[in-house]
Length: 300
Ligand SMILES: [Zn+2]
Image (cartoon, rainbow, N blue to C red; front, side):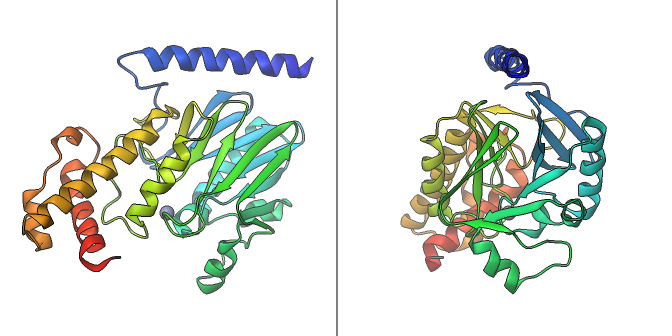
């Protein structure tokens, strides 16, 4: 009976999503609610929630047997997340899944550790967090090399490591029932790449996005986005992200080949008007260009 109801909710959710995808005004669903620098929670159906704190997001899944949490973000956000979960269920958080090694996404998990949660992450996290430990980042209890399927209360979360791309421990998280992918940092819809692309390897990033494009997904939930952005997007944003990077790299390569070698001159000369409506186009495009210059100039 419970399964039938859950399926019905899921199907309703997907019909609504499909309907809104077709809408010319909204890319997908309504934006996240809440105050811009505050936090908000959006239920996508079937116990799947998106939690936003400032421009950071994670997902959590409420099941009959407990809760799966992803990136706790930071101690302040984790506390808000924990009280949001407590309003929805009295079941404990059983698992916390880390997306990658960067501290701005995975700090603050101690409060979930205190309620007995097990932490899951890619095997490379052990060395990275060993080299750069933090008192507010519990070490993973469960690690894996390529793939790991987490199961709880009839729900599955499929974790995949795609090789180096942004750091060398990033995993994507697929919800097979919804055909949705939670992905952090390597897909941020309708925004140019983050500043000087810290810890991003441009060619590996493109390769990884091609891997994501092969996955059986219809939707993407991104680890970043202000409250004005939808909680969930169509999977086509992955291709848009890859094409942006390919356009950026091609433009920088072409300018270098034409004889421009100074990064300052490249930043002056190169424009990508196709993306002028993407967030941070004016401010961050020049920083993106300098990063790609370093890629070609230094092989880095
Ligand atoms: Zn990161």
